[in-house]
Length: 180
Ligand code: ZN
Image 1 (cartoon, rainbow, N blue to C red):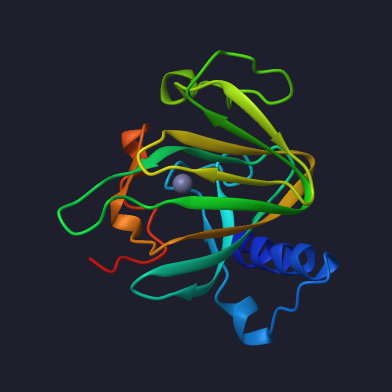
Image 2: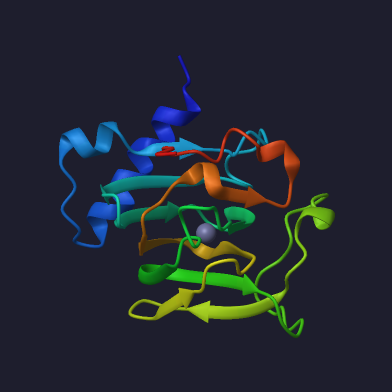
């Protein structure tokens, strides 16, 4: 039986390993494949391996397929959490990061028919070895270039229930975990 999710999981593991990152068989099994409940994984989705998520720090590895987009969101502040600070470091491929600012979109593109759910268009291009930090509360989205991409994310504790997506259809699909 064709299972898009297990295929995506295997493909992501191959992408991680091809960058030289050691991923155990057990870790491969728990790679989270999410389409953010939008129904088109290769268009809007992500493959995420959580390595660490303590009460203070989270480290994740993200694989994005060619042109795959991680939908626009921000990490909200709560009474007990000032909002997640998130740093990205690209290990392979190219990642386009979009944040508020002048619209200089050149290489990436808004997923078709989703224009209303992508409001920030200031493009930052990250290649292997580039690191970029998103302050808490900054609206952002990511897109891989044509070769796909692998990136590390280092952040303050990740409580995915605090991720606010521009597209309300993503409500449940965004949670890798929820410590709240
Ligand atoms: Zn984020």
